[in-house]
Amino acid sequence: MKCLFCESDGPFTTVEHVIPESLGNDVLVLTNDVCDSCQNYFGKEIEKFVLEKTPIAFWRVYLRIRTKTAQNPHVDMRQPKQQKGVLPNVHVLHDNIGFAAHDDGSVSVDMHDDDLVRQILSGEKSQFVQVFTPNVLFQFGRFLCKIGIELLCTESPNRAREPDLNKARRFARFGEPFRHLWPIFHFNNGKMPKVAEETEIECYSYSMVEVSGHYLVFRFGMGTDNWLVCVNDASPNLDIQALFPSESVNCIWYHESEYAGK
Image 1 (cartoon, rainbow, N blue to C red):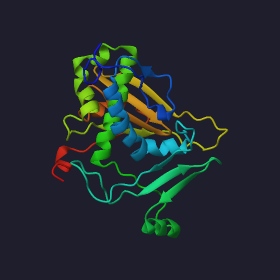
Image 2: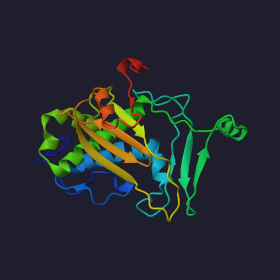
Image 3: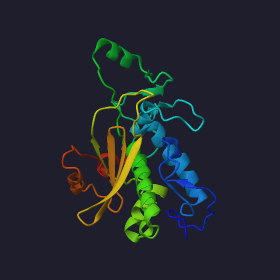
Image 4: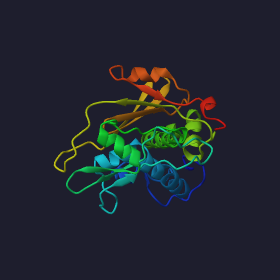
């Protein structure tokens, strides 16, 4: 069978972790479905970014998901100092901070801005702001589409290769069309769990649900965050919000007119 994403004949010499191994997954895997080249690309270009620069990065530290070498996790969530690339990746409201987990179960915050430190100490600021710029949304959307399609493939390799998923597969692997942003839906449930070694915490959860007999919606939960993408429709369809009627489901998306040419 050809590669799920690039349709090459391989080689297929390594195991693909549907959810990154860095998040603790060692059982949900694919063999002979994702070629070595695509696996290498996803690891270096998509997963590395998401695991270091998005809310997933925060949860990795907060939940103390150790690295492959059994080290405490730490992340640097600072933005670039100036705009780089086609998609905007700098926002003035974004707080340039990092997080680090420690052996005693605590999490520290690294603040790289003297003015931010002053605002915290004076009580002027009581929470940090992490902005989903178009570039972050672009990368995070590719990450979720990749996992959603691979999750389908674990149950039905043929269904995961059907034409209605072509756009999501191309978007995940090649970012095509490059300026397109895949809508992400989000809701927050429950209270932030306590960080303690003796406390058992679910690191992540996932599900695939069909909506209105057509929309295939992938949900990925981590901590109190739940992220949703429709893997067979790239429009910001608000019918998806009806999946969780008791939750406040928000759509994160930019129309191309909001960022094109910036």
